[in-house]
Image 1: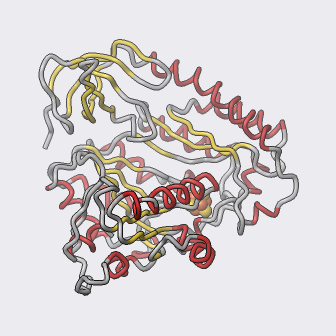
Image 2: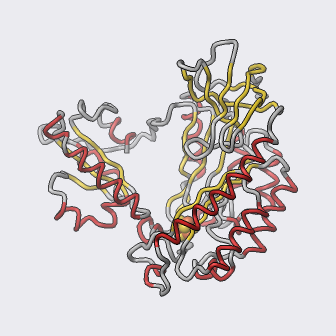
Length: 419
Ligand code: SF4
């Protein structure tokens, strides 16, 4: 959307008080996301009196799903754009006295992250229809973006200084199947690795049953690909997995985890779990707890089940009491904290590659991440350095201390790229 707007002559500001047009991009995956989206829209609507805002535009999943209701409930909003009509963003954002430009997208990408890492969306939609999830209904069927376009985009990002490329989609592991008739992720990854300037490639959202041997071998062999697997499993009790519509089971998930660690003993594994899915018994919860103990994930997020209107699970009997969902979530988080602490303590004394994300002047310390940590969701490495560093620098640092989430240590030297 930003690419379209820039081509049409718009310029951008992060300061909502300064903006003539405010664009709120929304999510409605779960209730919390809906609430946050609505609160942000209302907050931005106030800019029509407190700031310079002449037009408020709302885009994304929320209008895709609830446009009619929103038109009635939020008269402050001037235009809505769903998830499929992005080219209409220019007319939606244009002010009445402006010339209407025909949007012809040049493929330009406006980087909104700090600049040294960037997300590359490789596909849209999902065909899995997990029974608790609204995404397939909003985003449609899984559609891979053409490889040539993605490689061009990655090349542009590299020329803009991006060092870490993070591949995202509702599911990354089946990339290309719809478009090329076979999974193309291994081939795509090999091509991405040839782009000069990109030092780290990270993948998020690999559905466990679709992690193939070929993909793992490419990951193990290509130096630029971080040995980091984000594998959202959601549960580990077979009867709950079945009710969730997940097409895998506890034994297969464990087998995949063992295979990953066999091929890459240094691999960092991340997962996300849901507590309180309809009919989840104490026995199911204990099965999940024992799985967490056995799998020893490096990173783990837990969400309480959210009863989403329009999904099959919302109509299932035996919905679980909210307090119990939270209690089970807390049980898992406590257990994971111990596991994380053990894993982090094992890193003390090791020398790791660190990508610098910023500097904390009050503490005279740099913050960065290792190849085992994704931005926004995982921890930081706090590094003391004798020399001055810039955001995006790659260094080698030694771990001196750790807690359950973050590492602390000192810089050893700058990292010499192998390119
Ligand atoms: S695979 Fe992910 S996006 Fe697709 S339906 Fe399941 S939870 Fe939703």
